[in-house]
Length: 196
Image (cartoon, rainbow, N blue to C red; front, side):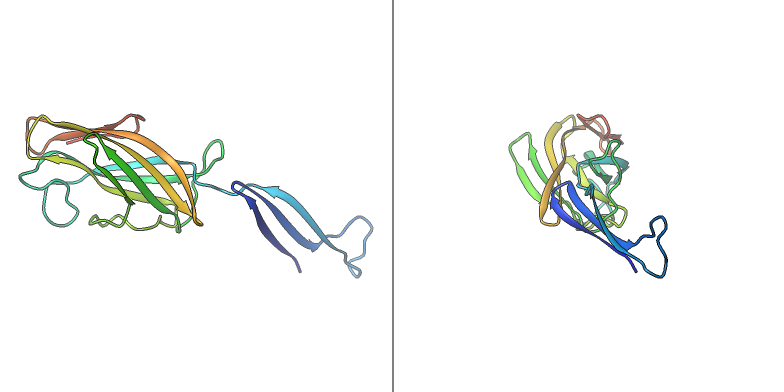
């Protein structure tokens, strides 16, 4: 008979305990000795995000739509992220109980502070999926006027076990072209670049 347990000490650090019957040199199986050992182990904590995909949402008024007719200069996207831990190289955290949250400050001073999901886009949810991924959608800037640019600073955090971890801060730059149904989005980290 054997068992193992982990006891949290602090964020990113813990001590693990294992107990079992271990036969030493010259010991008889008829007279087992129960031994307990403890070793430090690392606890995964959300540290960063990896962009997995960027899908451009179509113009519309129902379903998974982006910009609406009449406000169709610009772009709307669905960004899929993977939550990563503090290891080097960073590894995916496969946990379905993480809550993605965002704090957004637009260039005109408008501020929003909300959980990332769920929204009207069907891929979004309140927590991460079992593989530690989530969708941020719609990420958008839609305008009734052409040739407009706008930006925001987005800070993404992950809430896990009542702790909040900042995992990404980025500037999103949107532009609306001279043609309806067209626009672009780029971030300052270089891993988000979409256009239509």
